Image 1 (spheres, rainbow, N blue to C red):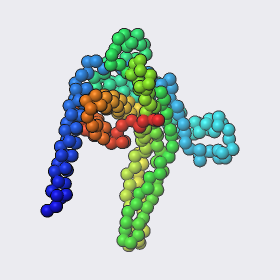
Image 2: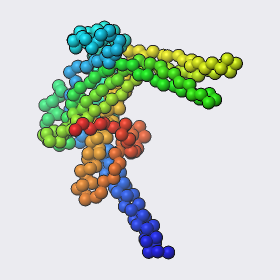
Image 3: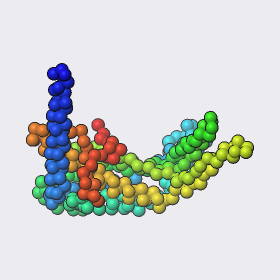
Image 4: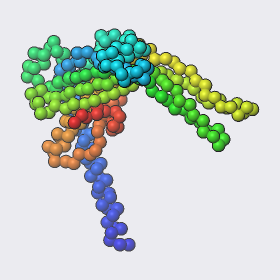
Length: 281
């Protein structure tokens, strides 16, 4: 046996132990942050209004020949959902769930009418400015397919869709250079159930389906879900930021794990790219 083959398993074991040790230390520090919930405070600045855009230009005759104001007006009156969404109701669903989940995660939450109280000597204080909310109405084509014998059959069904975009600005109090911008987005569509039916005697294949059309009340619930999820994203960002700082102070190596705290299960887990804020440069 060569020296190279002898040392390789040892090197691999050492690397594995170092990675395990690093992750264990990270989890310990993360747990300290989660437990130390008596000092965290946050000021929430809500958006002034909700931008609403219909992306269904193709429904308007000669849309490319119209000025922006005229086109927007026509898209608005032909919208299936946007014109019926009450901004105050949607904002209440969004903000109440965002604030409620932050409080459940251990934050002392202040709103703009409590600004002076918030600024009175808080050492671990952050400002979250929900800079913009946008609702987009559009059509999402869904392709269904199935193989019968040597032939592949497919059907494309257009579903009504609503997309919610959110922009966040998070900063530590009195540290302007510490400001960070983030984006998050979630959507919902009509619900569809369908299947391909093969008529063996005729050789005909049909796609049969039913659509449960999206309702305005469901769009309000999208706002509630987004507020709840983004409170978690906010917590996770601050948790990982704290972790980065502490690991650097300890002169340790930081793993590539972006941690998510599951409050219901009191459990730390890895968050995928789709389960966190998208940083904006």
